[in-house]
Image 1 (cartoon, one colour):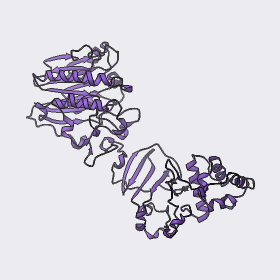
Image 2 (cartoon, rainbow, N blue to C red):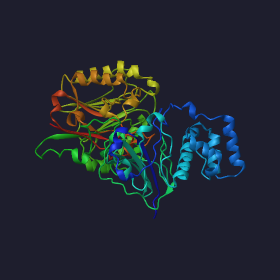
Image 3 (cartoon, one colour):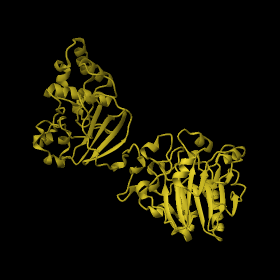
Image 4 (cartoon, rainbow, N blue to C red):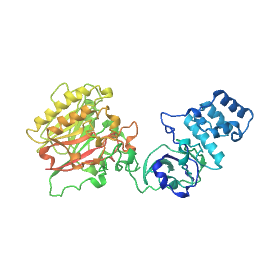
Amino acid sequence: MNQALQLGFRTIINLSSFAEFPRNLGIGRLAPLRGKVMGSKGRSISNSSSIAGQNFERKLKETVDNDNPISNSPLLKDIKDDPGKIEAMTVQQLRTALRTAGISSKGLKRELVCALQSYLAEEMDGESSLLAEKLDPSDSDKKISMMMETKSVENQVQGINSISKVFKIQISGKTVKQLQIKGKTVDFDAKIVATEQKKTACCSGRKTSLTKRKRPLEVDCKDVSAENGVTPVNQSEPWTILAHKKPQKEWIAYNPRTMRRMPPTVNTNFVKILSWNVNGLRALLKLEGFSALELAKRENFDILCLQETKLQEKDVESIKQSLIEGYDNSFWTCSNAKLGYSGTAIISRIKPLSVRYGLGISDHDSEGRVVTAEFNSFYLLSVYVPNSGDGLRRLTYRTTEWDPSLSNYIKELEKSKPVILTGDLNCAHEEIDIYNPAGNRRSAGFTIEERQSFGTNFLSRGFVDTFRKQHPGVVGYTYWGYRHGGRKTNKGWRLDYFLVSEAIADAVHDSYILPDVVGSDHCPIGLVLKL
């Protein structure tokens, strides 16, 4: 079955590299490099290229009225003498000329200009080649010639220092874009493409060529990278791809299959804790394909902390009745201020010594955001930190009231035994913790105020980010927004944490992420602590 392919390439010419161009490219003529590059926001058009309006309209009308092919019209001769006139044509004039030539007249002005330039180039040269234009007289003794051949993409890029090519290939009903940079190929999601045409961008004298391909172009996909912030895609395990707008050289993607540590030896006492923002527990349990039993069997956790359960008090008893056998100890807190909102829980097969709810401050305890369970050797908190909200309406409350209150609460607990704080803390602390840091400077969860508060109230007060301690240069996300399908391309945030007291930081055997577990816009995170 024929697969449709759309090929476009964009060339940025470096004059210093022309000497390195292969000689077998042939001889042609290069567009003048005077003025700004066509296609940029600003353009420089010389006065000698301007068109006398009435004369141009008359010639254009003559072309149409006489039903002459454009290649034989006075208008074409005018354009041959001064190709700059194409840029000065109005959209209507361009469309009229293209229709006369039997070429599609749909698209924006830049596309119309490209199409007309390509057609004229073919008329003049008899085959696909660059549009011939006059060189600047001042550079007449420095004429540079070349011809871009579409038969070999590789020949086009030799000797050019900065070039990129984008391929869209329809594969098994899904299309993957591939960006090739300096010999490396990367994949990333794209819309399904079904076209028999190849369009080549036309800027600064480049052409637009419309040709049919009988078979897809072979593309080397062995060398995959994430240069220039482009996100390649592993359809089955997208989290294994380094997805970041500005990745550092030493950064790598988190892969649980290779980075999770083996369980401690059988003679070692340890506890295994999972934490998950489920974004609505009842909806998760009804989700087709999700099995809490399978998750429990696979991970064999001792304690499960939940956030954003969205339960009401009346729902708790029925949920308790449906818990997996063996997890007989569960503790729930729900929002009273807004029903079906927020909510946290701790579910455990180890019976805690004591349980408390909230921070003990009425202003913070009406939304069901904190459950604390005391065990023999530590306190465990399941916490859902308030989101700063749309328009950052709760940013001040979050950073000046909630965070300091939570910090003081856990420091008070720490006086008697170490603390494990886990949950959705609604903050991507560092740039490595978010796919697009520059684009989210004023987004809830990545404002400078929230990040500074995270450092001041937790890290600077002796609590350790266990994942970052174990994986200092690893990009691992725990949240992907539904709106833009970020999970498919691993464009996410790390908002979920296990923070522990310094006293037990070295006892952490493993701190990990489970990106393959779906059912929420967050995924579970895990901690293995030696006792």
